[in-house]
Image (cartoon, rainbow, N blue to C red):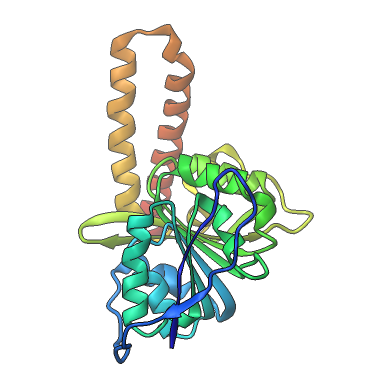
Length: 271
């Protein structure tokens, strides 16, 4: 059994060498991995495929689960931090998956250059803000090659959804999960059909699938959003800063959409 070395992909250059084998420490017998609700939901959205990429892999637990459950035959485990990536490499090597994993220290989708054909069937990007994920998608759109996307967006969901639309993708699933007392929102997206309509502003802010399905798990997310928006609007109104006029108007529209969704949820589950 061998373990692939970390490939450092130049952030400014699309060129990258393929990882080369090196001796691996004695592998341990793989044991079932306990994932929190967030990682479990993300893993469940990965249908069996040849190659999955975990961008921003951190500790490597998600990638290990994907290999253990045979959701992919090979894995790209990537992180912008060499130190963080080393943690994932240690975990995956000890579990005996070093020979099925490519490791790349790279910025965003540049990491795909570490794969022999530079292509992944499914790409997971979790635990980042919407601005960061939007930047990764927009800069690396040409590298996607039709891959299914599984995203865990922490903040600024509007930006992430807008970026998906801009690169020609549409959301097929959205889910709110609770892990360690915190709320997380996950999205799954695929290339859009040619006749796909553009998202409305309301869909970009709140989520097209959440709006259509109105799951009960969404209510605490919306209540939290309502609270944050109310505080932000009051602060902007108190500041009386004309430069905040556009931000204030946008926040007020988002609050209206949020409150409308809360009323629809209440009506659905009271009837």
